[in-house]
Each structure stands twice: as structure tokens, then as C-alpha cells.
Image 1 (cartoon, helix red, strand yellow):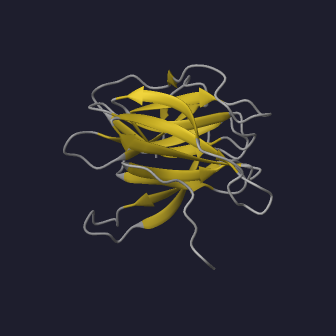
Image 2 (image 1 turned 60 degrees about the vertical axis):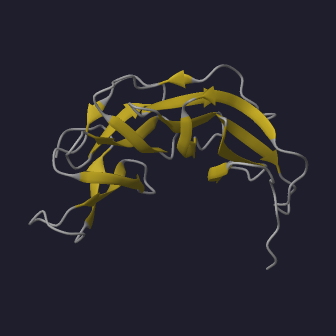
Image 3 (image 1 turned 45 degrees about the vertical axis):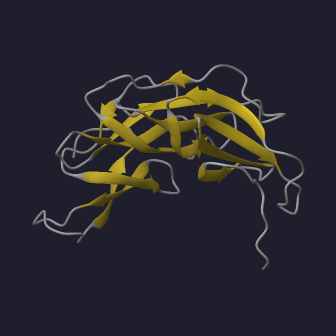
Length: 193
């Protein structure tokens, strides 16, 4: 197929993600302040208008975006010195932000990234990194409550398994060396493994 220019401008664009019904494309940008944008799309997946700015997040770059299966919540890594996970509620009718963004995590001793909604939208799985250490996988309710550690051994989140009760993890090889990772399932209700 032919490449098409969807958004032109100065700066960098990151992490495009489609609304579950395909009606919108969301992405973040870095040009001066950081921003979250959405572009309405036709049924054929073509732009149906200009990009609309949903949020201006100042000095926090939005990365690793994930949209809940019902399209009502968008979660993102808020990359600053502490890299917390934030969320913004979306209108199911317009896909516009219905309020100010909310930080779901607020701990400056860890970097939190790569969050993914469970198939039912009730839980977020995410990777946690400590300075100088390998990552771990944690879970929390979609509203930020009930944070719980899933892994004690080095791992990163790949996504949710289709049944919605387990997450797929990338773990280091048993000898702890190299990229000889393995995919393993972990329970949705948490419990360190």
C-alpha cells in the first residue's frame, strides 16, 4: 500500500494506539510541552479531520499508551524523573478527555512503564524498574488501587493472555544471563512468583 501522511508538524510523535472500535488514533508528541492527541478516522481507517489536542502535560512525556477494551480509559507512562503511570477518562461518544489526567502511581523510587489493560479493563499490569536492577511486574486496579507485586525474579510485561486471568511475562533465562528469555504466565490476582 501507499504511505500517507496523517500528521505533519515539528517535533517527535510517539506510540500511536487505536481506539478499540478503530474510530480514533491516539498519539503523543514532543515539541515544547508534551501533548496527547487524537485523530478521528473513517471506517476505512483514513483521517476524518485534523488532530485534536486532548492534553498538554507540560514536562511529562506520555509513552506506552494502552486503552481499556471499553474505550473509556487511556493509561500511559508519564516519563519524568520518576516515571509514574497516569490515566485519563475518555467519553465513549466522542473519545475526548472527560477530565484532567490522574496519576495512578506516585512513587519516586521506581520507574513504572509498559502498562497493559486486562481484557475486562479492570486491571493494569506494568513493569517496575529500580535503579541498577532488572525489572519486576506489578498489577493494580485500573483506578490505581490495590497495587501488588507479581514477580520477584527479573521480568517485564508482554501483555495479557486471552482468558484475562494471566499475564505473559518475559523472564531472563534461569542462569540470569543474556537474552535467553522465556514467556511465562502469572496470575491476575497477584502473588509473588
